[in-house]
Image (cartoon, rainbow, N blue to C red; front, side, top):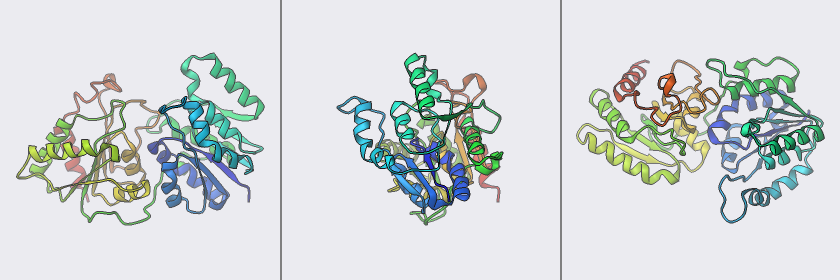
Length: 355
């Protein structure tokens, strides 16, 4: 069987978006013939979702510590890069569509007669050096470059880009439904059901819904709904914010408020399993939104509209509701102004009352 190299050193939610594409490649090539290169944090997900595939960690970081970011990342990735040099594949596919210099080097280091990419979305920064370098990589390594798509209603550009690449790789027209994101449960959640789950914080970028409004929302819901157990989750770095958030919710409705549990799953597969067990997921545009949707769980996503059409919004069924502001407010700092707790509460009540 031919072997396939998949390059995806992307964020958590972005990787979840590519789960359907990787699953189709596993069906076509055989899971054991896949090599998946991703950030180290994704290893538990790859082991859980694609246990027979090979995993290559790429410890790429965005922030500078002591050395120049490029130099530091080169040093961190050297063992993986050295291993890739001696690991030939029949086709190499990049599902990362924003590639810096190091990512281009790592991707092209894999010996392969075919290298498939979409147009690099970092070329829009106006730097001619980056465009010249990209042309050099394309020419020297004979990359097949596909046009990056425009947004179609309900189909994020990243999903359509993946569909185009897989169509070229497999030599047939791949339907968008064939690569629609799909995550699977591996273990039981670490908290007893039933419970609601809330992931209120994104990793910066102005995507957060104000905590005071979250508190008002839960006060409204507690007055009409029996919330069995409210699980707050996020990264370990967010623990302090989650504890303050928990106190705010309790203070707003001390008598009728829900029992609150703060949880930080030890790895991302257990995070997926935790989301899968929730009666409903309440979150903003972050990894929890994409995981809940890929799992087809009931979910309400408070969507700021940043990068609208690139990674979201998308749904798997009527169980998911991405609540976004008016078009003129999309992606602005004040995106949540007209997204009131009362309207969110109405949607939540409708979801939890539906069998």
